[in-house]
Image (cartoon, rainbow, N blue to C red):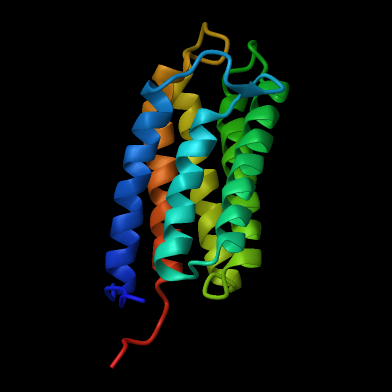
Length: 185
């Protein structure tokens, strides 16, 4: 088996964050009509799931089970966060979008963190989970900025900054955590 190139935590975080930016842009601008699960569009979850699975493959394990666990976990996380946002969206209370976005962002980050906790030995610290959830909640507040005052959940292309910032930030935190290894000799 070929030796893997060693990356520092910082390098791994940057690599996964760049992948998260690409995923966020694809989540915004790529579309397949009617590719949804119970009316929740799945492409953003698939794009971000590939990024997180790439992180597991690169820095944790090349065994398929952890990769599948995090991929499915990201899809579940996206589905729950999206469902929560759509279910509790109130057109008459735009100020509630800050809290709605924060809770949805935290839900997505928490479920993603739980699946990473299960699949990755290096991710299993409370610090990693807390950082991921706090960042997810803070980035989720961009929902308020992205959704117009007179629209019902802005079209997906209006959410580019939310997708790019949330996915890049969470992916960067994950990459940093997954590359926690002593430098090989």
